[in-house]
Length: 96
Image (cartoon, rainbow, N blue to C red):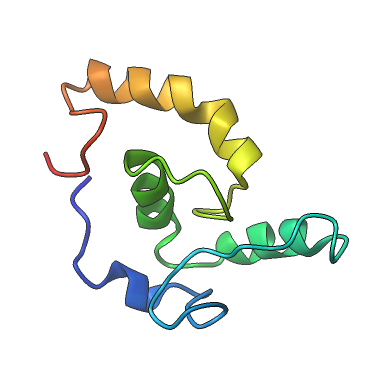
């Protein structure tokens, strides 16, 4: 996937934390249901695919990216890498 240079500016979560930084970083155990609510919001986001791909390529370990928590991304990481290799793509780069 080639990232649109401005994909982050279209993220629904933009402005929830640091200006210009997508993703959401809920404090564990602080607000019950917050992670689920944010992941659901991601499903309405126009750049959810770019966000998840960005997190996977850059091996981001914390926060919600592309509708998945860090636990969710860990669960799909091996399959994601295998799919990229099968497609002839570099596993550690969003540039093709």
